[in-house]
Length: 428
Image (cartoon, rainbow, N blue to C red; front, side):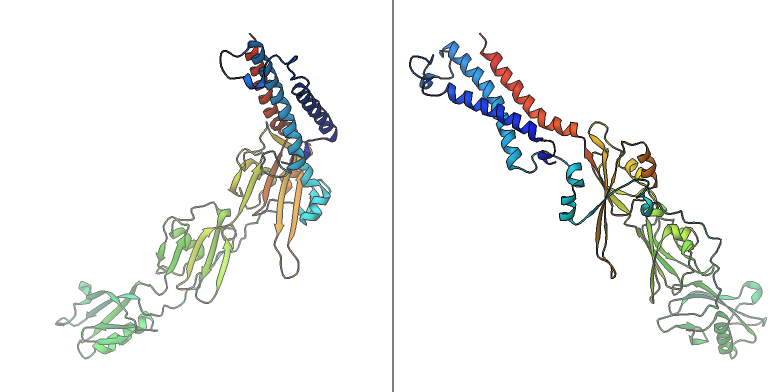
């Protein structure tokens, strides 16, 4: 906080005059005339911090030390006000410095006072309306691929078959038959069969033809039990990440996320990325819930991560720091509530600022804007309820002038108390 913001010219003149008087008194007291042998009560060279020192001399020294401590405190404040730009502690600039037009021009930012006439372009947007549209998966024919796992059941209607069990007893079952990297599967008597690109019925027909030479009336059934090639991977900020099967039918985006246990964060803080090897798409989870559900292509990957929807709270607020926005459409009133509201004992309600930097695009340059809201006005509460806070905004509340004066006066009072203590110690 700049000391000059609270240091009026009139007050500076008064303090300088007091300091000059103190310095003159100091010089007069220790001048050669006053320290002559006839006037001085003691010799400077004879003063020692011991019990034998003259009582009156010690009292005089103590009184002057107390006065000098006070005078030097004023002199230090005067010199610091002229030599140092910021001698007071603080979390940011003062109201006067922020609203100064010359400072704004040098800093290349625009100052906007939020009123009923200026808040129009910065109002909160309407909430996302729920859509009546639903995602209807298209059931396509299953074509086998490398890595799929099938269950093959073979039976023979002939009563005297020695190779395969009859259908009445369930036939002969070959479980967990995984297609190799070339999409092939190997069966007894049928040999190596190329199953890649075939449907389940198509593979059954091929096996049946291969077994005609070994069985009287072979019956073949093929069932898909593992579909690694069509499964969907869900990773990131979900309760149970993993790979999920589409055996029950094609998965939608909500299906996959729900099977993974759902997001760990609130919907407005969740970002979903879907990629399928050909394209990638980023969605807000709230948009997905509102109706933008997708049917996932086989082997898709779904990444659920924290959306960068944050703001910074600074200055005279209850809980400063980096925080998540409280909703998808947050108002300044909500954001101040998240930051613990204004600190009643030090905050200046007329100095509530929002710093915003609109990034540069191909058609425009980056633009810095500082919004100011005077919360000392009752109408400002309604304005704060309508003003939209965007991600990466910085909320800053300045200190009250009284609090800044307390920071100035406190060290002076401490010096005065110390000087008074020294003076009291000099009394016999």
